[in-house]
Length: 149
Image 1: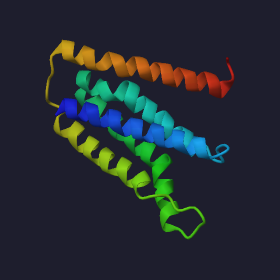
Image 2: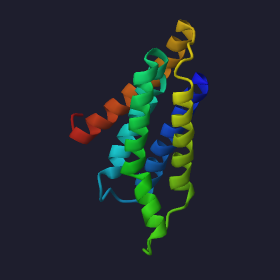
Image 3: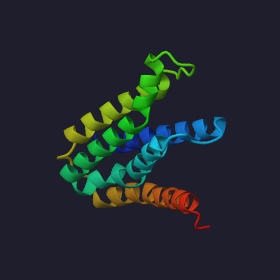
């Protein structure tokens, strides 16, 4: 169960990150900071919270749940509101339903598997790649955002 939670958290975060990349490719720029907040939560989930629940199950489950709620309510829920409103832009249901379904499964699995233990070497092997990638992407985005290059 814990490994399935790990994989789902990586897929959910990657989906939101790549959805943001697709939006940024099409648009000339952001008119709101909410997508950046959502991507920040996605990077946090991908790089840290995807594996933190291996080491601290209850704290990891709470943080993963809160990060998903923050990620979903900062941007995909706005896409859902835009879908049901009568405006010029009409996003696809995949853009807001996929994070909702993946996040619902993620929350269910992280709370169901919080008492399961894994081998410490498996924990370490699963923790290092996303942590390094999350630090790289998060650091790169912060450097670009604050113009420190």
